[in-house]
Length: 74
Image 1 (cartoon, rainbow, N blue to C red):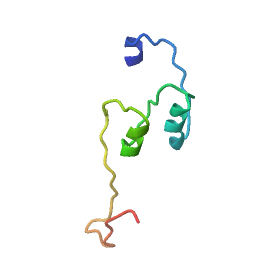
Image 2: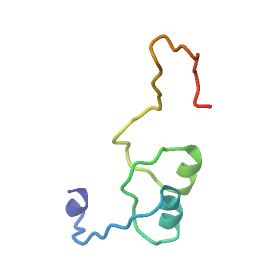
Image 3: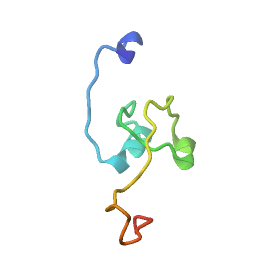
Image 4: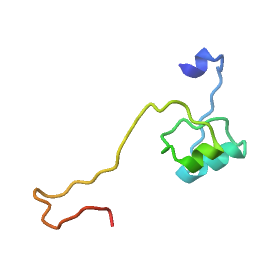
């Protein structure tokens, strides 16, 4: 809908690995990335992000009472 409002009628999707999205954009292999990316300072130095449309946090589940005392992914 947004691209249509901008007058862009022809869109071709390309599937790439997660780590290839910004390098592919910078190399001109495609014009935009329409996938979720974490906005990190080093990425902001390379590309311009739109306003975020999703905010997410990482988490993991443990058994009730956390019997193993887990508090990080390691």
